[in-house]
Length: 82
Image (cartoon, rainbow, N blue to C red; front, side, top):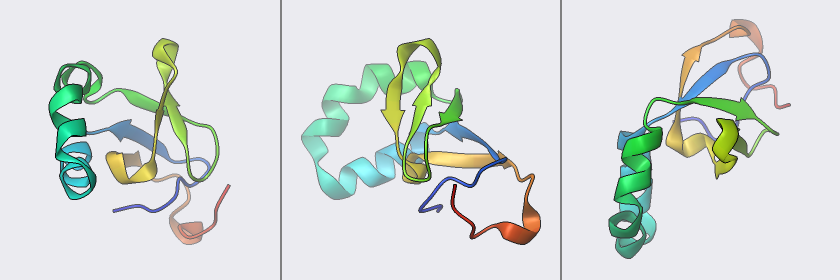
């Protein structure tokens, strides 16, 4: 699980990771968010900084813990933050 976004890599939002994190912090949050989570599952994340990203036109804020890196463009500088 990534704790920060890495500049140059490509990330997508994943329902599975969101559910895992949401269950740890607040179960009511997960129940209320199930519909929008289904709608954005697999959407590409725009990196806004090393701790936050956003999803397309919706502009929804996401964190690295909810995302999966699908393309690693910087294999040798994985720990370097934006």
